[in-house]
Image (cartoon, rainbow, N blue to C red; front, side, top):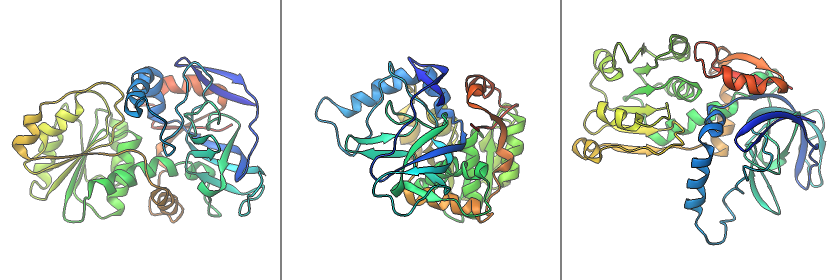
Length: 347
């Protein structure tokens, strides 16, 4: 089958063996898979990030609850934001059948452990024609929901989780730094929770326009108007949570510098490089800094429900579609925020 394959931190399009479902697993045809910014970062900063992961894991026996780490000198097929059609089922599958349209929490588990789909040498991700999914981690897509919108479940779930981790509530305000897919997902969830005002900041006019469509009350170009000034003009009194959704070195300190006393900073941008900041900024203001990663199965399911029930319209975020052979060029195209927000791979 055709797939966009990563090896030694570079991409190629190639033919790879088709996977076979094991116990409790299904073989599924990829209908749509979003290209995630973390995949773009992985090609550039993956080695540094992987070294840190190994350091955190230590030299002892591997924690059975942690995912098996992929080897970069072996083939890896990325892609973890997918919607699929079940083609075949393995032993012990009772609630899924051929023809079912599903989304799945992007992990597969077997006798060898837990494998992150899109970050595994064994299980290909969504930049391929077919993947393996565990029945227990899969959800049937409600009738009538397009497979393209269903594929937006995973990126929305990131925003759902980040907002939950921030402990923000009605009567509080939010500033979102960075209006890529992660920042936009945060805005969508904040709007659904009735939070306001919501201030978004990004250099890109197109991203600012998308933020307004999703519910941001004010959007600014930080080169012209600092986000914290925009918040002071529109509110300035409510307790504030700043969402750092850029994920490049220096952004945590920027968020700390602009935060008011007793403010909270939620870091959801996936920075894979070393960073530093001045602790006295946080000490002097008594800031709370929280980091967020991924989502829970319940948050994943609630994201799908919100999309299916029409509580949020993510269609404007889908700005391009490519076949598998177009994935390497799509990675390059996503470097221009005025051209694309989310490109879907549609095998």
